[in-house]
Length: 369
Ligand code: M6R
Image 1 (cartoon, rainbow, N blue to C red):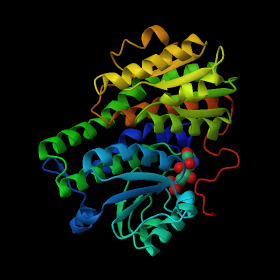
Image 2: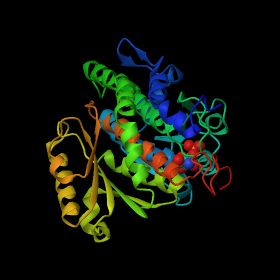
Image 3: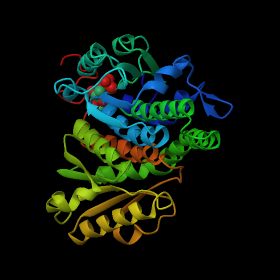
Image 4: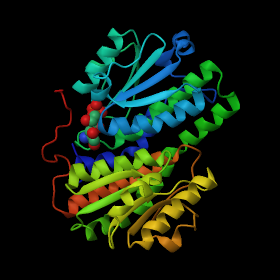
C-alpha cells in the first residue's frame, strides 16, 4: 500500500528517518551500543584480525561507507568487495576473518554464494539484512537486522540508510568489546547517530520541493556526474547508480581526487556535476581540496550542484545550486548527503514520466548469479 504517496519509492524515501531510528532502537544501553543479537559473541570479536564486507549494488556502497567507521572505531582492517568478485579470486580468509554480508532482501544469489564460500573456507560470517528469516541470515553465524520495514521499490533507499546505521552500530559494539573507543567517545557517537533521523526529516521538509523542481528542469539531461571524497565517495557512486537505475540517464560517480587523473576530460560547458562537499569542521584540508575541485570544473563550464552543510560559504561563489544538509557529527554526513540524491533521481525519473518503482530490466531481488 503506497499510503497516499505517488510511488513506493516516494513513500520509502519519506521513511528514511524512521529506518535509521528503528534500526538504532533497542541497541543502546546506558549510552553505549549493545546489540542484543551479538550477546555472547565477545570472543568472536576479540579474535578476528580482519573484516571483509561483501554485498552488491547499493548494499556494497553502504559497506564502503561503513568501512570508514569500522576501521576508525575498531582499528580492524576492513576490505569491501563486490560479492560476485570475492568468491572467484581465491581470497585469503580463515577463522580470523569476519565476513560481513549486507543485503536488503537476504536473497541475492551473488551474496549468498559468497557467504557460503566464506563459511566453507573457515571464516566467521555476520549478515546485515532487512528481511527476517531470509536465506543469507540463515546461512550466517550472526545476524544484525536493519529495521527499515519492507522495501518495495526496486531502487533501494531507506534500506541504504538503515544498512549504514547497522554498520555503525556493529562498529561501536565491536569497539566497545575490544576497548578501542572509550565510553565517553562511544556515548558521543551514539548521540550523533541518534540525531540523524531528525536531520533527515529537516532535509525532506526544507529541500525536497526545490530538488524536485530543478530535477524537472533537467529532464532532457543526457549525463550527470557525481563527485565525492572520503565518505562522500561511496555516496557519489550511490547517487549515480540511483540515477541510472530509474531515469536511464548516463551517470557516473568519481572520487573527487581522481578528477585530474582522467575524468576532468569529460567536463564541457553545461555538464551537470553533483559535488558532495565534506564538512569543513571535520577536516578543513579535505574540504579545501573538494572546493578546489569545484573551482576546476566550474572553470571548464560545469554546472555545479553542491551538497554542503549549512553555513559552508566557501562553495557559494562556485556553485549553481547549493543543497543544504544540517550540521552533523563526524561520519554522519553520508546518511544526510544521500537524501538529496535519492530525491533528485526520483524527481528526474518522474519528470521523464517513468515508472520509478519498476525500472526496466531490473528485479527487486536478484536471485540468479
Ligand atoms: O537485496 P540486496 O540488498 O542484496 O540487493 C543488492 C542490490 O541488487 C541492490 O542494492 C540494487 O543495487 C538496488 N536496486 C539499487 O537501488
